[in-house]
Length: 156
Image (cartoon, rainbow, N blue to C red):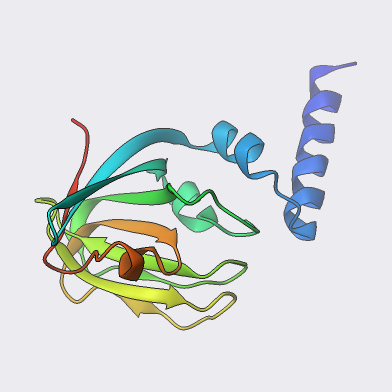
């Protein structure tokens, strides 16, 4: 089989999979994103560790958690932006409710949009310029008492 034919088959499979919304979370995300961990120091003297998929590129930012039907409880997605600015997120083609945590380069949480509604085109914005957005399963922020007094600690 020629390389072009193999590439064509792979592209066709990806397009069909994306259109049908049939992502295997572990398999496709492990291929498309680097992984890391973040720690959130919550306001009630507790720290929580999350495994995150890291979205660095424009393409990764666009893909986000679209078509994901479930996500492990201690997993999330970290969007990284080089320039601090007002950021917004929407839930197009996102099947699970998410807590959207906007935070600055120093780790302080600016604001949180809790339980963002799946498939919504409503734009959820940061209250001030930020470099990072952390998406967690909906309800995690409330359950763990994560709020604007909490801090996100990134690995070096």
